[in-house]
Amino acid sequence: MKIPTRSRYGLQFMLMLAAHYKKGVVPLREIAEQENLSEKYLEQIVTMFTKAGLVKSVRGARGGYLLAQPPERIRASDVLRLSGDPISPLDTEQSGAEEGVDEENPALTSLWSDIQTAISSVIDSVSLAELAERQQGDQLIKGA
Image (tube, rainbow, N blue to C red; front, side, top):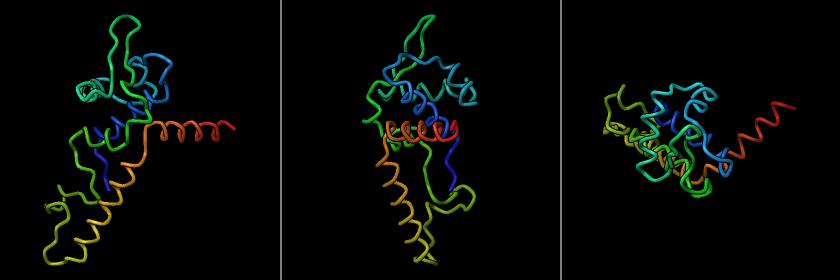
């Protein structure tokens, strides 16, 4: 399974904002540096989140970005689906197939469908708050 770059960057960006929730704004440059992401590419992604009402922009010398909603209310699926790129167990561009439909092998089509359902279930069930907690726990373990 391949997660599109825009989706990965978007999730990294939103996770950083979730980790800083209630601590103030985070400058885009800081996020780009800490997450090792392209600032120009992040600018394009941020626009999507701002338009969707997930992120607020603060202008000025001490400006930056912050979550527009509590991280408990934002699901990983909200972030991943906003990019417009499909999250799929198959690379449909390479195979030329339509989302795993294989008319000659309905058993595989059924399997791909089950996998897609499982992926959707997982990303729908995890909030940014939960991801931020996991990340913090991982950092504590690495620092020990």
